[in-house]
Amino acid sequence: MPCADEVWRLHNLDQPDCVHFRKFCDEGGVLNGGDPGDRTTRQGTYCCTPSGISLGNLNHRDPARVKELLRDALKKWKEIDKKDRLLDYDPKEKLSEITRGENQYPKDGLVLKVYSRDLERKGLDENDWRTHAWNFDFAWFRKAEVAEMLPERFEKKTEWDFPKHLTRRLYRIYFRDNVRGQTDPFPEDSIEKATLKCKVTKLRKGIVTYSLEGEVKLVDGERGVEGKIMGEVEYDTKKQAFAKFELVMAGERWGRTRYNAREDDTARAPIGYAMKIAEDKATEKVAPSQLGAYGWR
Image 1 (cartoon, rainbow, N blue to C red):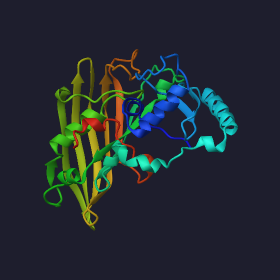
Image 2 (cartoon, one colour; image 1 turned 45 degrees about the vertical axis):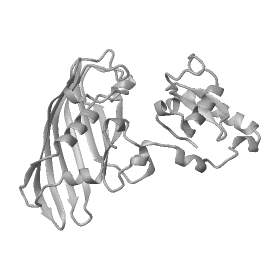
Image 3 (cartoon, helix red, strand yellow; image 1 turned 30 degrees about the horizontal axis):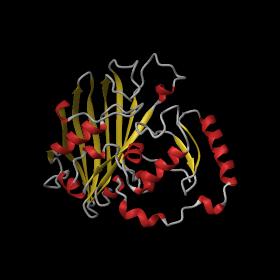
Image 4 (cartoon, helix red, strand yellow; image 1 turned 180 degrees about the vertical axis):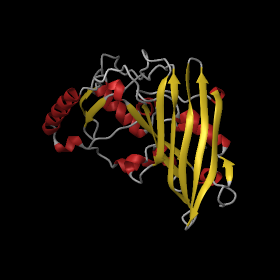
């Protein structure tokens, strides 16, 4: 059964699933030449039995090496007695002790899938994976926050500002340069411009359509992003939910952070972001990577 998870939580917290993760990590030996028991990083691909017996691990992008790891792990799995493969208790017994970001999933709110990628430019190596890199994340809004996004009157040409605190949160967290790798949100004091204007453009059979238009400029030391935003949403007044929420940002980014793989690419360059409503399925209910920056209680 394949699965993926955020590694920082797994190797830093002492909840049941985290302890179980570190058990097969440590049992599997040193990963990539690190120190045994080292908690600075546990990124990689791991194979193990449900009981926590290590079947091998690797931290590499090469599909051929991952394929070899899986083959070796399957061979080891077949050599282990069935009774030793499984836990001696039902994992469901431990669920109440586990706290995960997914527990805050806003079922009655709004969930957006956010894509980020470099826009086309000349002079890049087409054989370099970084040339074609892209990333995605999720943005969550609670029911009360969705209510703040709506106009006081559902009348054509009604204009209003998207809630300031939601605009600032959306921009500083999701317009960060995570195209090639991991990076932190922009801090609050990095915001030089963050506007988002709304205007009702169409009314039909209980559906209110309105446009979004804004600008953003974020500067944090040597890194920054600047661009323009456009979008369109449809709100179903009967279901009291968004039927459509699409937003794009096109602009430029510059600078780098420690883990976003921009070491030799820090000059101003075009970048783009796109957001749309996430699908109602398990793989799109993953917690935002920066949920801790929301300030939710």
